[in-house]
Amino acid sequence: MINEKMEKAFNDQINAELYSEYLYLSMKAYFETLNLPGFVNWMNVQIQEEHAHAMGMFDYVNSRGGRVILKAIDCPQTDWDSPLAVFEHILRHEEHVTSLINGVADVAEEVKDRAALSFLNWYIKEQVEEEDNVGKTLATLRRVGDDAHGLYALDKELATRVFNPPVIE
Ligand code: FEO
Image (tube, rainbow, N blue to C red; front, side, top):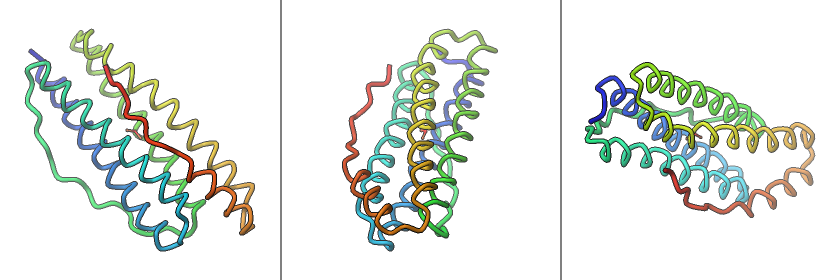
């Protein structure tokens, strides 16, 4: 049976992951207005990844005999000044999510839940990948600046991203 404090930390993180999904959905809507299908595709993959992150924890809480309690999802930002501003926002957001995941791991350590700590290792590694991935695209966007050809080339590249359902265990 999962500890009550641990259960609450997971429930809060499920909410944070669903908020991430909602935020990327809002960014997808923004890129639809810019007519950049590659960026839209990138967001589509990100939306599915965040949903998988939330569901991984949802299933884990249940497998430990806990109770998932869903809460309201905050309203996401709906407009940005540029694709660069979006990716700056994403990096800030993912750094924040990393700190939240570390906080859940801190609770697992505090209540000596080694199984939860082991489960959370997947998320800790995933955040390293997320920040790295976003950081690279952000660096490209900074180089591209206002160059339309550069943005077009990046859009083509982002169109190739595919969703590989993660195995979270
Ligand atoms: Fe679920 Fe983007 O972290």
